[in-house]
Image (cartoon, rainbow, N blue to C red; front, side, top):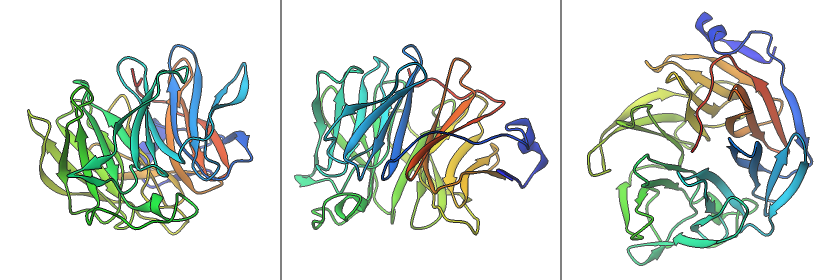
Length: 296
């Protein structure tokens, strides 16, 4: 069965008999999906393929950027611009939704090059938060090179000034991150530790009171990776077997099992009830009952 039920409340979020549909395939390692709520298309990375692709039900598949600097995570800001984490260049970049206006927002902290920015979110005040593990300094997910920094950090970027603030420096492999609905908390998972931590967000955007929120468990392939919160506060995180769904109290309700190892996901279509999942060589879709959230 594609749906692993660990708590009966899961069926209020996704049907027990939900069907997983493959919508595109033939890639090398898909990641970073984002849905454009007005133009109705999905943009996503193929890290190893060094390309950002775009898919729409009407127009099918096309290349958005090639080469992409082995791009990983993407998001939209409030103006509909695309922010991208680049493995090969160790940079955070920004471009317009049509691909024009490319610019580098950040590449260094304290005079040292980032490891390989991985995943990225934008707070409602415009501040950008991203994780920086070393995964993109290894083949095949990036280019082989030594790290300049000796930490695996979580950072805050002020896009207008370019100021970068180190928020947390004690992760082993920081990866997916997302805000709670009211933005008072930031969740960050650790691929190497197999768990999710949560932090309180202060008025100045810094983080305090970090603590373990949940373990992401299972016997199948997969690790904590992409992570987001839906419109009612349920937290979705990639993990063993597919996409795990937690309630607000950190109870793991179950898993949307994906045919390939799933790295990330986003909600799309008119009702934001289609969950698009980037998984290894493919992109999959499944219908859920609770809408996701628009990125802008």
